[in-house]
Image: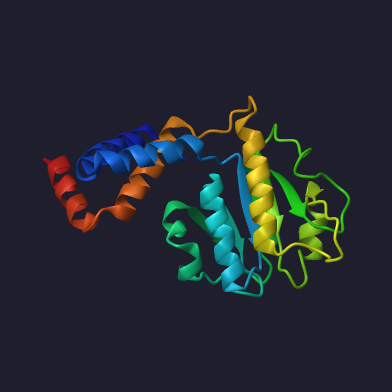
Length: 231
């Protein structure tokens, strides 16, 4: 957790960099931040197909999800730049890959922050997108299309969610599942009275992050700012 001094310095740097952002770009940032949330997050376990992995990130950005937690047990999470269309620079990606099995580390990290772990599985009885409780932060867990979630990912989850199906096919493509769930859940969230929006300092931190990601030669500007700051 950052202290007050760090926040003040970040805020001052943000004010400096905003001088190099057009009013239209700043207004766009503010509009997107109004809909951004950390109340819902994703855990992706061993998603190795670049097209599907990238499509999920794109859906996260478009539905207002800020954080994505990537578990690499057997496979490296590969991103297809043609599919993400730049969406990764607007998101925060957290990777778990320090051991042979990293799923529980991701679970524990999010549980410590108050998240309920909700595993997606067409084979488990549980909630649907229309009745999943949203009173507490939730982390939706997705697995590979071929094998689904690992046994430990399922057994250590706090609950399950499935998308009702009426056809012959066994399940939705993972990128489609993520898009359907996120669209429904974020719409429900925004219509609720829950405190789902970003905190003021979180908004400023993301605004700073996005400024850095979009301003050309931002490193030179930061050096100029710190020279001023030291005087």
